Image (cartoon, rainbow over all chains, first blue to last red; front, side):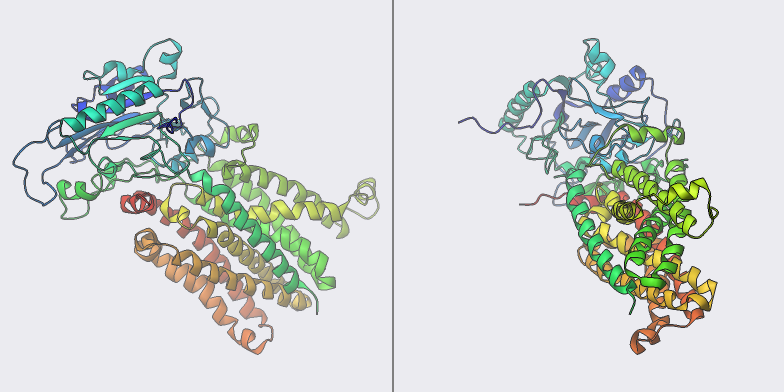
Length: 274
Length: 342
């Protein structure tokens, strides 16, 4: 019997595999993204959070490398030996997940957010009117309104480069192939092999974030840009089991309609003459 | 227009809690930084929720009063209809100015998306204002505002008013309640945790605000409409009791972390004293004598009470939106909502 596929990704879907065990925190992806997409510098500041002065994904920042220096082990003591890969120093290049069922896309009231022929999710800048509803509708905090043009922006998975037969700028620039681009089904297979290999090499915590089991859960059904992580997802600021917010729309409408009927009856009764 | 005041801050503006090191903060979250982005919504959307709610509920009240209210229902209906019509324009203005690119408002009308409450809301506002405009014109004709006997008036007599009334009441009711669904269908913990209660809660508040506004107008118009005022006041009380019940249900379903913005800080204070105290508790107290004695309240009491209800209604929307911002900024709340469930 065929086993259930690990992701709900449609046939021919293109995506990213970001393998954090290979990331060296060089931020070449951030720079390459800014340069290719001509994204302006944003409010550059000092965070005091390890080497992460980028902070988060935003309207002008579509790749964001997070840094977690694990100073203490679970018991609170300083570790006396370094773990294999990343040596107690976790780095992860975060990006738009290009969800199989995307909250931002379903929320968009103008149809500006569409799914491309590569099964990626983009915001058409000539249509977006900056209503900002995609911003809280994303369970990963990806889209954001730009303070410059007041429209919503996020990673396009380099739609223009894909059209030209090239891989996205970040994947191209990544010196360790921590960021890999390709067909989601191929990448998922590669990721499974890699996780097995890592486990054999005693990285017991390695797992895929973005299959149907973790990350792409509760209606999202998988992420076309997924990750290999070695710590709980929350360490990297990723929700463990996010939900697709729009799955709540119809039940909420139903309860509202019931309440509306009750109120109409109540109003009619209290307005009735004696 | 979007302002720089909210939604645009970069995350290092969410400073670490005092006396906590980066290492400590990194243990349970990513340096205490938000997981999700909060919306940019502030006053435009808050006022839109308020006037839009009144617009929808007032039109529904106008129709119901006309159908079931007898002669006194007519005077309620008249006030409610004009009030509702008066709220359409500020609603639309707020909705448009809230956009980052207001000149592109019409792009909202490119698509109909049932699962997007923002899309449905635009269509709900549009259709309810269409029916409402026709009904207001009819009201104006019957009030003699369009003249007595001219071609326009003669043509308007042919309008199927009962049908328009029946068709208009549906989008009006949805306009009063969909704003709760709009908040519920997001990733913001405070709004989505109890998503089934959000729509009914906003609906109840809209009804009580609209009834209060009508009461206020009838109260200011003097003794001639005393009977009508007493009846709309009954509806206001009913809506307020429903609102209290729904608020209890809403808050009982929240965990301590998720409900924190409603308990602490500025939004907590405003929720306790503004929404619950001044907006619901005080008006109920003022009406206490009439509730127990089953006799209508005096004119001055009812004017003060309904003004308080209206202030409370605006405060309720302010609190829900701004507490939502705080909820979105709190990684603990998001993690709690998305923790592995077996």
